[in-house]
Image (cartoon, rainbow over all chains, first blue to last red; front, side):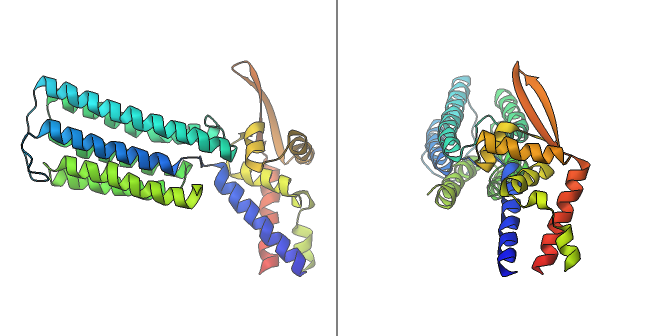
Length: 207
Length: 96
């Protein structure tokens, strides 16, 4: 009887793990988060340099940009996103291979289908604001939409991404309330939060 | 005690069949390769276990062509879902 019990306890574990794993894309890489965070810190430093002439860090500054500066910001922002996504894709492919999960399987498609709508909406909104010259809202809105995308997609990937998403949303709202300090919140959310979460996930799943 | 043992389903004694059912009850469908990746089993092993679930009418098979490549999708049937629920309930009772 005891043996039978042990077998069924084992069976319940199999059931639980299969139900959980089968609906999630589990190959997101923690290291990718760390790299994205470093890229974000570097980007916010460069953007700060570009946007604020005076070196009075972390204090309120009004800023109005010339069209060259807007173009430079645009190039800076898109190269940051592309390099972060590129590093993420490369590391995730490697991890997927190790997990025996395909990067383009039904799990990853579900994940992307729930991640990208909010992210692309936010991206387009930010572009419109940039063109129209509403610069102060851009950094916090990036955080807000990225956070919403993460929370929405977290049910299809490692569940810790939900916590990260909530942090990004809170930082985004704070950034809108304390308008003028957007870049500082942006550096916190995309930089430090990514690095922290990336290290945590790396130690938990990859090490 | 007797009724509990009757509710335990022999079809789900095997780990591969148990895994296939666990995956299919929480997903609308899964194709052969995804099942294989999740369960880490060989083609032959997986297809023989799926066949036995098919025979019991616990699993439905649909063969499709996606981008001109054949793909086999599996779904759990109503009967299969019911049998699996009963099996889990029996295990839980047994472990109490």
